[in-house]
Image 1 (cartoon, one colour):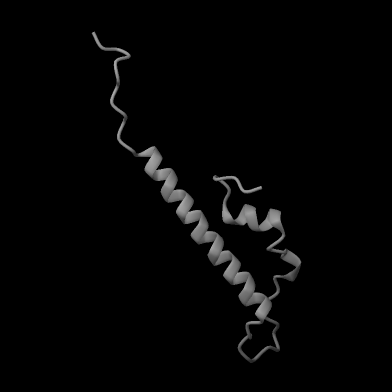
Image 2: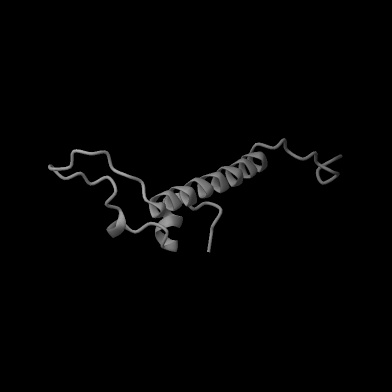
Length: 80
């Protein structure tokens, strides 16, 4: 379930998109002399993170529009 106020990290951890055990891409051994290669799995994970950040940005914009919208004019509730 996606809450409007969830962060990308919370979503990725809860939904199983990010697994700490599989995150060995940036682990460099002392005898590694060549540049690490991106795998399709890693590129797919990066795509999912980018899509979710865009989704979160759109939701944040909608929330900011609601929060900072001008106050509605009072329609007869407190008029004398």
